[in-house]
Length: 349
Image (cartoon, rainbow, N blue to C red; front, side, top):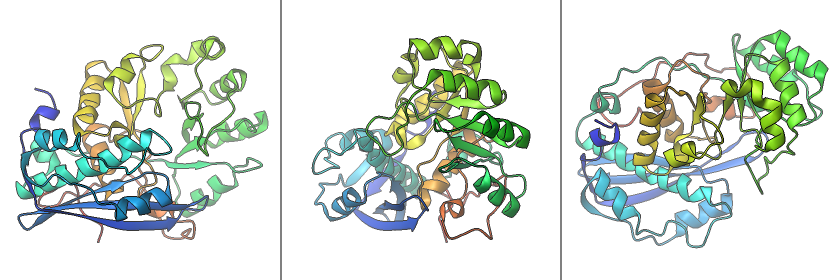
């Protein structure tokens, strides 16, 4: 029995939809998201749109959208969303279509669970695990370990997912290896036309792989040169940005051993839960990824991590780690994910 089949028939009644802004200075930029709140029968369910465009978020909240209302099962509600125009005009990045769709589908799952007085763990018959997480960051310009050491002073034992750039020197790599705190290096090689694009360099990729022999190597820009340079390290190569479905996994240049599962990239509940099943069937280790969620979206990806890959380098740190002005009180890990009486996850207080 597939994971999605345990959820697809759950009933929900949608009577109204509200959209609420969230924002936070996260240091490198000012993050804007939108909470999608579906209500019905005295309950509500929430999701979070993580589209990276503040003006697009404002347009979303002001748009006149023909929301599907009435009684559905989750599969039927998802099918109804296929006919809903969630953007007034094509977004800057096609991936934003999935981000917004995920917000609405996550809200629908939350509402269905609350109306059924069920939790996701109970509905799927899974036990929640404590969630191991990493702090995700770059090393600045010029690159240095100063930010890592500052955070480690606040939260001893912190581990990291680091955004690579071509300015990483061999002495810096040696310093990182000596610190023994890095679990993932993200090459950002699969992005085009975004603020996080990097210039690919297969030789430098290999230098990272050799200098940091225990880290996961995420999203190198794949090419014949990269294939040759990274051949000895294939078991450590992971994918994130290109993955929106199991079809994308099957289209990879080789069968992966590890995968970043970022729920918002999948758009629909069905595609996400099919991805979990696919990885489990094929023996692919998983870890979670986030999108600078500011509210319930962060709690939801922590919940999913707790059910499918708790003991992994999950990029699901608490929202407090985003706050550029917060350097004093940060929770350490692992996280004990709290399930309420019902719903996708506990809500922020």
